Image 1 (cartoon, rainbow, N blue to C red):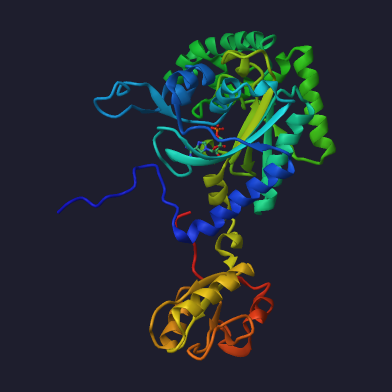
Image 2: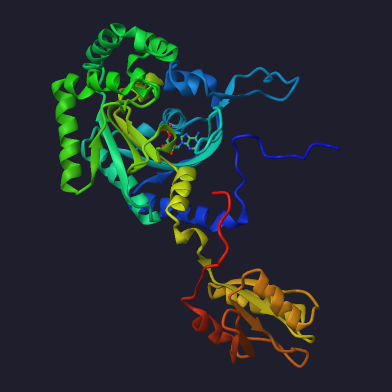
Length: 440
Ligand code: AMP
């Protein structure tokens, strides 16, 4: 017996039952991107490893352990090419920004993107090897207003999709002026307590001491006593951070200062933030995160340019909605089945379906020769809310004035009316099939 083919570990198929919920998230993300005046950008799913190694930092988990490498076709010159599937969107966007000279456009540039990211990590609940992010980036804006604006935008997304109790964790990790002092303080503190650190943390201490705070196995008392980034900020970074907090306060946006929030990627400066459902603030539970990366454009070959971005995990947002028992997950627009009698031509069915679709309805036309009763049964089984039954058209054309039967498949009632009156008769009906959405 051959093994059954299955999706690779750590990936998920988006099945038809989940489609409407996923589309809804994408629609809300796209709509907010427009309302906040972001312009769309799309970059390739893979880029040279070098881009991520430089852009994310050799010591980041994304580069060190999770890079999903790909090579060219066997035997080709490119076989050994060092590409990686993108682990995050920012490096590719900044690469495109520099490559296409977008810095000459009147700035700041506000860009958005949506699509899959890849991290070759050990899969577990909420951690996939392929997952999707909605991402926004503002390049060329030093803040602090835009920092508060992107945090507010993320918060609005969670509110619009219907997620409750989302909290923002916030921190500032300083800049090139003050970070070295903070690093030194961490090295001093943890260096004197090496016996309490995991092997991983000892290694982190040598290459990127901030990331010791990221170690989920760090003893809580040790973490609590560690030097705090906010106590080591230079005057400019402190003023920036205070301004961001004040703007959030004025907007009534709840946040918690989180001294351990240093983010995994090396390129972050100043403002960093992550979103969680309150009480569910574990490692694999961040719903999104982002921050300022004032050094990245220069690091990738451009001139010094301040920038900030946020990436929202769509898979985890959907998981969190499912946890809350959100009904929008199973809501879809009312489907209308278009059925014919024995003498109804296929042309009439197609023409009537087309007319109803012009009017904005979701229509599934039955092109079978089955008896009407059978067609009605199967329309109900596929979850149609309504059936429109066309008359025999052997005597003439079916058009807007033709009298049809509109059957309510839930109530089991029916009425006669003109085809042209169907859209008004069914408007405003949403459909909530009783079945649960599996697997989200
Ligand atoms: P990060 O750049 O790691 O902060 O990722 C931004 C967001 O993407 C996170 O807050 C998660 O919501 C989501 N995310 C990151 N990694 C994964 C993963 N392996 N599986 C699913 N979602 C992820």
